[in-house]
Amino acid sequence: MIKVAILGYGTVGSGVFEIINENKELLTSNIGDEMEVKYVLDLRDFPGDPCEEVLVHDYNIILNDPEVEVVIEVMGGLKPAYDFVKSALEAGKSVCTSNKELVAKYGAELIKIAHSHNRNFLFEAAVGGGIPIIRPINMHITADKICEITGILNGTTNYILTKMDKEGADFESTLKTAQDLGYAERNPEADIEGFDAVRKIAILASLAKGKTVDFEEIYTEGISKITAADFKYAKVMGRSIKLLGKCKNEDDAVVASVAPRLLAPDHPLYNVNDVVNGILVRGNMVGDLVFIGSGAGKLPTASAVVSDVVDSIRHLNVPTTILWDEEKLELEDFSKSRKKFFVRTDALKEEAETVFGAVEYVDAGISGEIGFITEKISEEDFSKKAEKLGKVISRIRVEE
Ligand code: HSE
Image 1 (cartoon, rainbow, N blue to C red):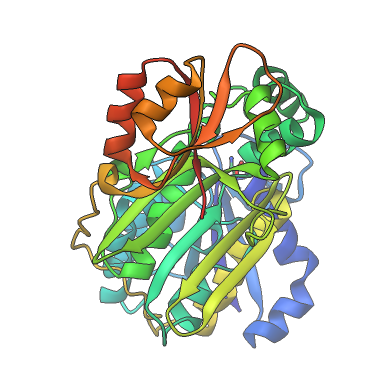
Image 2: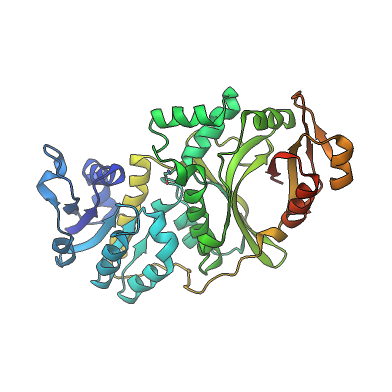
């Protein structure tokens, strides 16, 4: 009998408890042994809930119990999660987590500590919710250089953009609907400004490159400036607008970003709608691999966590290879990255052409402005030209 402990009985924690009990027989055969939740840690009480019998309020009970082999951290945030996880690993326990903040900031360090104790630090649920993406990168796409990862990594923003696209609604009212339906937080900043997605792309980039990609160095732009008018132009172009986390080899450098982009219908992520997440991994041998599924939610996220628990018990004293060194990966300056831009402006066509040269016009029938697509230019050049034009209403990057 293998004993585990769950830290945090929120949405994901209660989902983990539910799956372990509901799928008990299946998990026993997958593991080859029985698993039991010996403790659930939470500050709150849950009268009448099935977790009541194993609920504790003091983390030290778990830390000091040698019977607990695996600690499941689903509290979120850095404090006290970092201290709890570090001390569990140092005590020789494996840790499985869904905490992208923790993994983005301390992933390499925590993997190293786990391995120095012959244990595992696993985090499948930290990116893409229920979608298997961490394990495929670590264990399956090992014959390839990964040249690109492009992902719709945030369900909340994908839901909002899908609704704006399909219903022609504006950003504010769609955000409010998303909040009323429980898809968006009351404080939605982390999702809509891209702070959630940037941590996720930093984790994927670190795994793909084997070195630490600092999420704070990744260019990040959210969706709060996207308007119903932008979608009118997108429709004329036959494109959709998606918030994409990207990490891509450009020449000899690695460029990473989170930003809204215009996607054509032949792009593998074009049809990834609503709260669904999608991740495109491009290997230099295998070509394109696409992973699509539930990127958030209680049971999908808990399912990924429990799959890590199964893995960590199957390999109780065998560290799983995860190539993610503490050494920092120097990203290419985003201002050097080149692409086409879609621009809305109230300048005249001849002014736009004087500054940008040959452009491709897009007519969405909106009076008092023009829309056009530039040639492929660097971010730096674009900013200079946009400043020179001086009348830019909005601009969105065009995905190749
Ligand atoms: N807020 C996140 C999302 C939850 O909307 O995708 C999953 O990380």
